View 1 (spheres, one colour):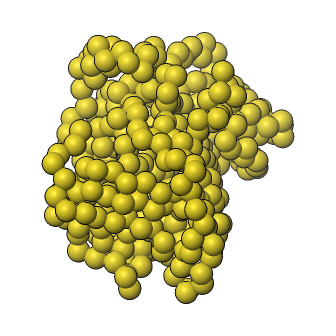
View 2 (tube, one colour):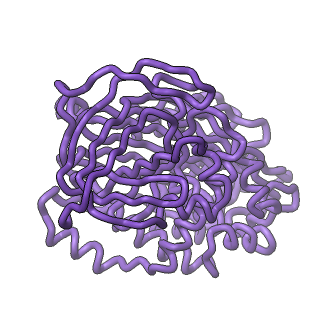
Length: 429
């Protein structure tokens, strides 16, 4: 079964995100003797089981204000991340959001206020409930596609942890809990294996433990799906792709024509998307000649505009998309500080809902890999917090992606799972 699935996978996205939370440990601490809760993923339903899907959505309502907050967070953080980059880049706002959301449920005072302000949710209780409902709505595991989110808490065995935090993490974030010895280097290996297992082997991180580390909070997002209409491999041809610095490279381009497809013309860009069988989609945004992708992503307002604004129509769309594959490494601590989360990085940070020990975030790191071909989509994300239908076509439109472009992967409800820039289909430019 696994070999068959891999055969039909077309887009690979691998993400690693690390937040290091370091703690100063006073003497005389005692470990918690509470049993750690067991966590089971939501029950999966078949690809064609529309009734079960509707039941899950109706039983787990997600407020439009929460989805708007999540997308606002995505736009704000993406603008910061891509502003200083010059090569290929891939980022999962959903993974970062879930990691910070779980951290926020154990934060207090100014630390909680800043994180909640960035997440744009008024209180931890609402955040937990909405995160849990969104989790259950998004969770997909069928013979065609998957969207699997997993969380875990890796806790120092000699520290007392707050039971309410652990229980809420299990109930609303499906977080498994583990009691570990952070002085043992094998702990990092065990954590890395957990990531590999939950990301179907698409990412193999090396997790380095910090000297004062007492907690790792890990989030993974694994996504895969098939194009609604797969590209014909016989029509894939080599052609030129021109990078931002004027270099011309030879790439393999997938080619297709859709008689009726949504197409948007906005200020400085054109946008269209390809449907996925589980009702998600991959959006492609081509800047106009002379405009760079980063110019279109330079502010949260501009990021929102390229994904949401413009004059929409249905057109016969000619697609020409390069097959691409690249890795990305992102350091995100400064990004979070620039968007208002500073207290969490200071020695007097308040994570009193997690532990009574002094604790602060010391590092935020994200690693990704993405690649697409003719058949479908695969995407994965890893986050660690270390405490160390068609309308009538009108005219024609071209989506000839032979120069740097922006892309996004969206869930059926519009949640932005991944956003990135392809500067060079053959690797980092």
